[in-house]
Amino acid sequence: MLQRLRALFGKASVKPLQMLDTDNIPQHIAIIMDGNGRWAKSRGLPRMAGHHSGMKAVKRITMAADRLGVKYLTLYAFSTENWKRPKAEVEFLMKLPQEFLASELKDLMEKRVQIRMMGYKGDLPDHTLKAVEDAIAKTANNDGIVLTFALNYGSRKEMIEAVRSIGQDVQDGKLSPGQIEESHMQQYLLTADVPDPDLLIRTSGELRLSNFMLWQLAYSEMWFTDVYWPEFTEEHFNEAVREYQRRARRYGGL
Ligand code: V07
Image 1: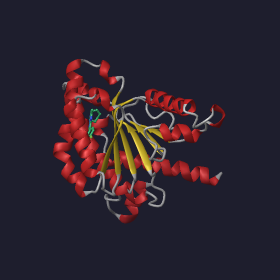
Image 2: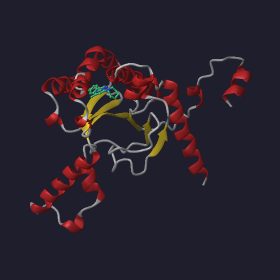
Image 3: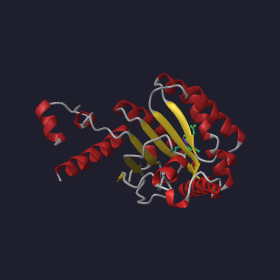
């Protein structure tokens, strides 16, 4: 199809973006940014170099999502399981939020990006938390894309915390067990003010959810690619959105 369009227009510059339906851009895209270590290994580099390169991809894909008009982008940066990694690697990872913000916050402000964090702040080092909270505060009134970093996030922990809060409401007599509905869970999850993702992307060939947004992804489309996260480009991102739109058209025909 693209070949035929190129032949028709006699140009090599027919961009996939032109084939996207601007009326059906997913409102919320969530991404499991996998393959940073593998990318580094494949090039004979230390894992840390992969994480660093992955950070560049975060900027690139945030800008790509903004260009498409995506309203919410949620990125899995660090899971509650990631603490089990070697201490030096965890320490390196915990410096990335500050490094990312020091170099990119200016541009993100100009694009009116609103930065948020989803996860458990308690276990984060002070320097990490301070940098993230500072960025959240500075961007709180921005009206552009909402960029949420899942940092020290785990979906089962999130659901347990929600169930605890509901249990407390029952004990306080605000609610009876028979009245508990989906909306109660929804309002106690970390995503209470955010619509469920329309599309989940996972890079680097793994076909699992790995404890990421289990409740919120119940009805989401999923798109997987073998491409390592540091090599994930705007073209790959647009391809995922194009596939999302193709599926939507097929359901529409049913
Ligand atoms: C991290 C780079 C992306 C690939 C996945 C693992 C490594 C950006 C952030 C970040 C987090 C919060 C924030 C601003 C930026 C980040 C960690 C790891 C822990 F407010 N990339 N990135 N945080 N990687």
